[in-house]
Image (cartoon, rainbow, N blue to C red; front, side, top):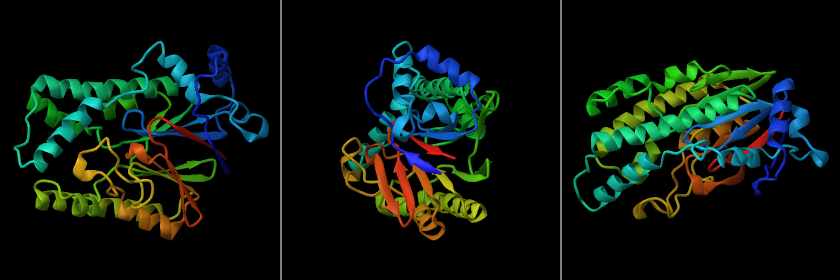
Length: 308
């Protein structure tokens, strides 16, 4: 197993249609391609070895360029959760100023939900045309119960992302699940709020948020205990202190702080998976090592190739 840097350059001008046709015909069992969150998900999918490996063991297919080439025809393809993020950060700033939480209109909340949902489905459906897709949820996806609650609050029926993903052939949601891919163990850890984040960022309603975070952290701890040792760990937020420093896009009083998870850091230190892939902190894009583990924050829709 090895990992190969992706090409982040401009679209190469390759014949996209020819590449896609070859990807349809080849056996899809050689490589896992891991993407940073273009729409708040984290996702991996499989492509043929001979297509992914060019001379000098470099990627022969410019996947990032391929996506950008299609995006020129459909700008929504890469996904977006900009409205949700803007609304959340606005209330964080208001809290810092001692102002009441802003209540957004039903129309605004519907638009924000549908922006994330629609782009999520477009990305997954597109990639599932060429290879099996594994995905975990980030911090804007809604479970069915959460979607029902939001629908009730805004008085508008919303689609169920969880149900609709199940209907897409070749897509598997691996929230808190293990996948055995040709003998390689891949663990998918769903996003959770770690108690250390609440301690460090001190959100409004601190006690309530801490109680909720403790429940989520204890659940994540149980999941990682069940995983035991894995070859690849896929998780949303970075491990604490690695590729997790908040940058200028966030509210001012968050900037410069570490937003990663101490629980994930502890697991990586103890179990030493070969690779760990995360996102969440877009500006933390890069690679770092924790012992023998290579940790990659894939930022926004970047990718790495792992040969199996």
